[in-house]
Image (cartoon, rainbow, N blue to C red):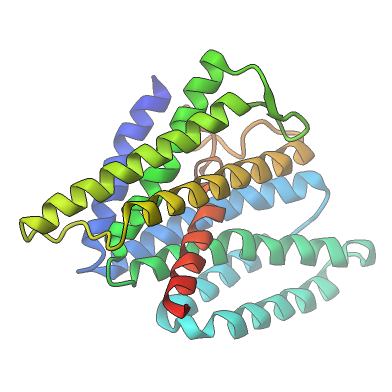
Length: 276
């Protein structure tokens, strides 16, 4: 019940932010920074549990600088990321004991890439011509796949998907997840076509059904891999959840782990489509 109530509050709020952001992009920027900061804080807890002693406050400041730079000038993504990485190396060199200079730097830089850079692609996707539609597609494809995997896996799951990483995930749940993502993709494109036929431009999904179905499968697979990757990090840290901020859902990192791979995949897919 706590899981359902938390989702009932958060999902409408997130969808509202998506469709408000074209008029007031600062709303989406603030939402991305808030979720990224909370997730990064939990990630740093996991890193410290594994044995690192990251410069937590400095990393959070670096996250703010990285996101601000990308929001202002997306073309600065690579040079700003490089500069921040070198700055963290210098800080850890003089702050950490010799045996921890490399792991402290590595955990800090990876946290910014894993969470900061990945979350920034949500904003980059929103800047596309049909940005709100793309974001809604991304979120619903990932969320519906996650819900289907959870309930089908619990009810009928028998064959373990990746026992070493997450013993509770099953092939049955994984297949159901892909099917659910395909169904919601078809539904969104169909609704978008009906709205466009009546000159209502809230949803825009140009191209064939096959294109969007293929994209849904790609995003679903990326999301499932993202979920397993975060499970591996948590198992290495010896914890079940990344945090306890969301009743029934664990931590913020637990909620966005699938998006941390799916969002960059959508952004790269858009870049590839525009390039070829």
